[in-house]
Image (cartoon, rainbow, N blue to C red; front, top):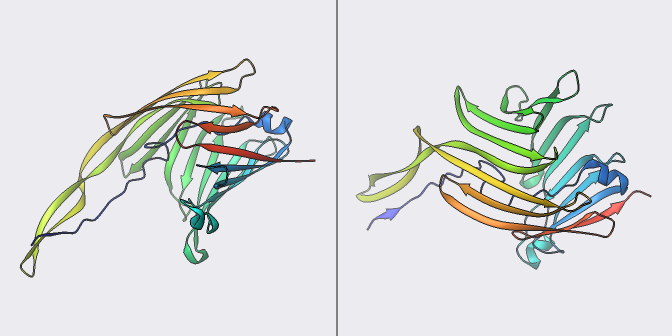
Length: 273
């Protein structure tokens, strides 16, 4: 009898590659004018807390607590913090550092840092993403302006294994996200152990394949400049297609209330006095 032992290799090429892409935040000026202090984000239902976002009096996001996923009442009660992200700014309110701390079991954690660099005219040049040793960057993002775009690149030695670009409209809202990853091919091999034939899968790093990804986002705004709808067409892993529409709803004061159409998100707010 043949048994199959499979080693599963998961490549996390992007948070956005296979799932929802949404413009979930509003410009700093909106948060400042509405005196927003905290944003509570709920995913799937208005009871499923996903994130707590802290905002300073200038409308800048300074801290995000990301909570574990929940699937029912039992897991909802057992929610815990999975990740804490903190942001630092200089005296001109330019972002300088973003630090992600991932929380593991038994309160163990590991941190990564993104450092931002600017031209003399205060326009963003690049950001470098450092893993826990904070010595050599594991990825780099370069920025261009007029129009505003960002391109993130990951290399293994001289081989580019990840390169993706975001294009923005109004210098804030994502309107296109495209690029590629180069992955090691997953292959199968048969071996015989104690007279039994077994098949296992392995990742062949000497034989790689390129997988293209292209998302186009058609955004619709109202007269006040609020984003109302995003029509998204996603082509990933070369030829897999996913199309959906996101609908943005707002409170009377103009703050985002919900995003519906894929994985629903709901927003509540706490304000400065």
